[in-house]
Length: 359
Ligand SMILES: *Cc1c(COP(=O)(O)O)cnc(C)c1O
Image (tube, helix red, strand yellow):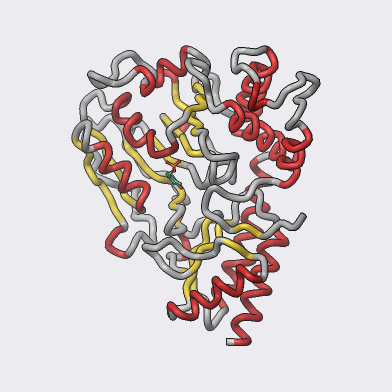
């Protein structure tokens, strides 16, 4: 068996321990005589799996009792519609557009009401987070929407926007469980798990209970009401059962590693290795304003497209894969999620040094 260092932005690297455990349990999960993939989501065995996953997540994130944890499907992208359908009581919401994903959410919200773009960093290819300390937020906006870590551009909010009392809704797909958060500051925190937590197919929505109501926009399908899933503890219909099981293993792995404080320290150390190198390199440069840099997604360029392509190709041959940047930024992007070992980043930097010397 040989594993590569996988710098994919998502689906992304998972802890080896988790994959090994899942392999061991593949044919016979804890004496049940079957794989988790094969069992009823209404069985006692599966009930334990999903309950334990929720309880571990609650512990890790210190989720207050007045928040529900929902395990849903449809990708993060489905939330772009589900959020306005459930929350836009006044048919108005404020959006801060800091990248492609925030922009997509903003555009989707326009299908349901008045989505107001209250700030944007599109003028400089989303390479920074705008000042959100005193935005003009419409009085009757139902919520303020952000994408907290911008997967494609590699920026992250270091302070949350001043929402002036409005409910904050955040897409945290690419920074989920990368550091501690104060859940009580948000109305909804949600994310697709395929970046930092598990296999594609699961979306976790952490939602304050008062936002879960029958009062959704007319025509909202049953499956797209938070209330449907909250009332049924995420078992209204067949959930993405195997994916949730893997998420649960990742929660346990994080617990064993020491929790989110430790994750944060590890992630800061890893990111520093890469950013410190970029800051002194004559060949490679980061593309993002320093104070807004993400700990998870690190885009960089040489400034020469052919050299970028050569780097990506040679890196791949050396076992560092998925380093090609997003098509809208070009260059390279190293996603260094929780499960990327420090050694992977150190070796990547050593490879970059060598490449710089030789080219
Ligand atoms: C990947 C990503 C999405 C889209 O996720 P899907 O599950 O493919 O819909 C949305 N937001 C962010 C921040 C992402 O990184």
